[in-house]
Image (cartoon, rainbow over all chains, first blue to last red; front, top):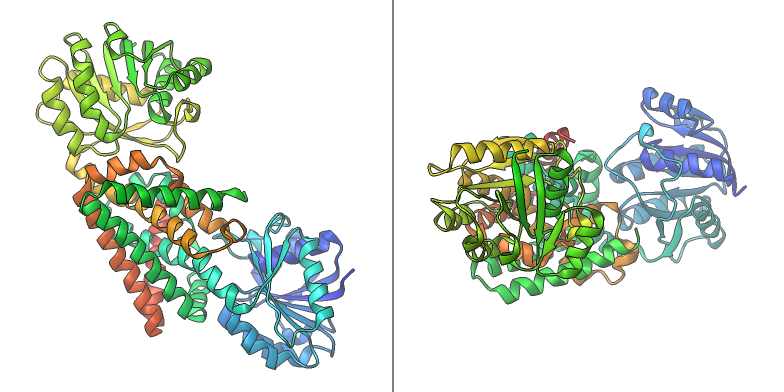
Length: 284
Length: 284
């Protein structure tokens, strides 16, 4: 057992899946789930994701690990509210999709008494809430860990073991590198998916009838929680804007090749896209 | 039996699936598969998709139906080459993703002796070749039929029955309306998918490691045949350019809301995207 008593704040898709998987793996002892919605907590209890639940941060009791699994821009405020209820030595971790802003704001809140380790499991779906949790969500996935010069080495090792225990492969990188990489592989993808769903909806009268498999797959993540993605876009702004600009330039290049009838240029772009797609598919 | 003897030119994902499904449904008698690749034809024979195959259009014998299931810009040339081998009364149909350019070029080739009916089944995947064919590909799908003032009513009825027999729902519309609608729901989606795969590939060093489920789904169709999509982009150019422009304006609006920190505007766009996505998902 890596952590005897744990609190998971935010028993949703990620927090719920981690609690469930770690309990099954035996790497954690008792897990208390914390959330605002009693209905969601009841679902978590019914599914057997956590041992007990509470809507009050003050009621978690002494814990060895606190997992913050809440929307990115709520993380600092919740850490602040949670801090008085943590004993010295409690390891604090988060699972946010943006790391720079979170690591920067959480270290001053947690350190020096409570070691903080930022993580981001690269897994998930467009669904949310405890009902969407899966005990095998992280099997075969990657988890990025973003230590700083101030990170406690022992706490980092235990957090890495926690993720390995639920089936993830650990990748260590800086928060900045994480945010630039994920802007391309995830944040941009969500921006595109939202923009595509909206523009198709604004322009096609009978969307229900004409949506084929390509549109369905390309807009799947447009069903994701708007509040969650607003937070991510606003917390990784510079990188997200860069990737949107880079993508727009690429799409414009493809558009220009179509307009000018430049068959060689178009084929070169489509072929390179296909090669990149083969790499994207590889891990599956 | 709607058509006793049939030729399917192009025994790939769509042509192969139609031949297979129609033979199983009993709406066609003997089907001869025509293609350039003997290896692909051997696959089709081995899978039981067609009764016999040939690489020569001249060798098909007299047929009651000729299905053209080849890349969009090859359709007219193949129809021209096929025409001398068709008896009067042979119904000619195609399954191309673009209808305006095909209908316009095929009617003069086929009429008046051979009735022509343009169709487009809204089904498929990023895979190609006979090996990708599925006998149930069209179950629960839609098939668009695009008659003109010159279309033979009896031929149209039989073609519609052929598609109904393989599980498709028929939607009749003009070729122009089809091309505008499909530009939004399919052609644009493929352009975006190619551009996203290429720009992610150009900017992410370890794409294999960092591709998550959102990027995988959004780039699935970037694995589609480049030659096939080059043809579609070049055959529905005006509508494709319009949809790329409309999408880029939408993405730019989302980008501007992120850059300016306009939370209300961003949420409005994400919420409307989610509503459109719900319609897209509905039919599944």
